[in-house]
Length: 127
Image 1 (cartoon, rainbow, N blue to C red):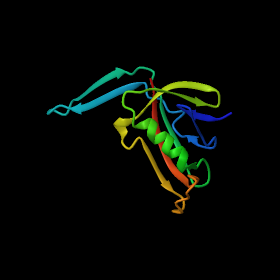
Image 2 (cartoon, one colour; image 1 turned 180 degrees about the vertical axis):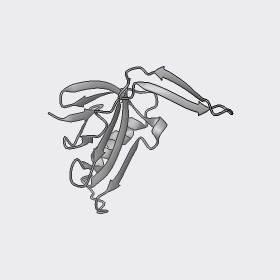
Image 3 (cartoon, one colour; image 1 turned 45 degrees about the vertical axis):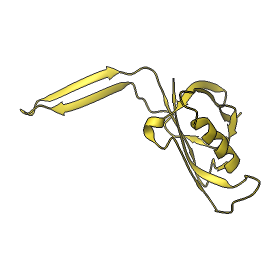
Image 4 (cartoon, helix red, strand yellow; image 1 turned 30 degrees about the vertical axis):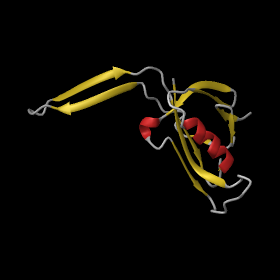
């Protein structure tokens, strides 16, 4: 079993940190000049945020993996299949929460074979 995003196989130890959070209602709350609260709510479609995190201890990715994911993120208005241990989702990158991908090298070795190890975050949302 593995984690695959748009054909790019990621480290199976990456963590989906918001997997069990719910985002089903959007709410806006303001006070009138008299201090009375005005609350507006809207049911959201069933989109699920997916935040994948790679730490130094678990889930790091290689520079080659990063380059492949970065190439996916640069394609505007494109959806991808995200497979998480056999569960498949149609996703897009969360460009409204920039940066949608953010990684830092564990060591700045600049390996010629693309094997540098990186830690960071990938932000997706189901469609």
